[in-house]
Image 1 (cartoon, rainbow, N blue to C red):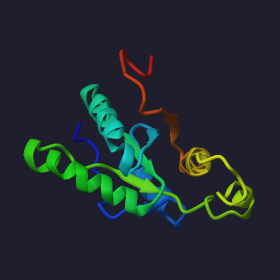
Image 2: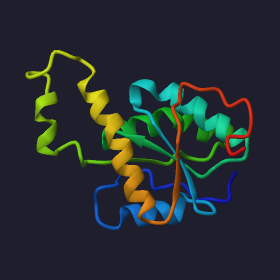
Image 3: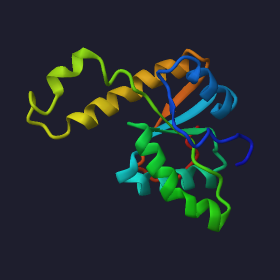
Image 4: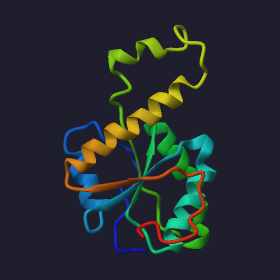
Amino acid sequence: VGQLSPLPREALDIAAAGVPARVAKTRGYRGELILFTADENMAGWGFHFVNQLRRRGHEHWLIMADSADNCAGMHAQWEKMVSSYSEAPLSCAYSSYPKQHSGWAQWTRANHPDKMHQVYIFWATRWWVSLKLMREGLNILSLDVDAVLLGDIYS
């Protein structure tokens, strides 16, 4: 822990020019990055996952949120960990694309009764973000936060 710098507190949009390269340079380690999703409402799950990764010596991770506001909300909640326990800041980014793609129109609440439509879009965005980061030379290990790391995740 501590070998890598955190991303800036203001959320970076992976869809913006140059951001995938910046994330790869700042958060990648030996060509690897661990990617997981969280938002302000499930921040506790994300925080637990950050702590699990750090206890195992992994700092090369990125929280992918679904908006800049959710990154800001998670940073605000994590601030006590920074100020009271000297934890390193979070590294959070989001992607404005492919959320705006016209193909998602069929999944809007008005057209689809499933209340999980935003979650499905968020999950699909993970794979687009993974592609952008792989194009920067990173191998992506995409994990879910509803897991307990009982062993070495690379063996």
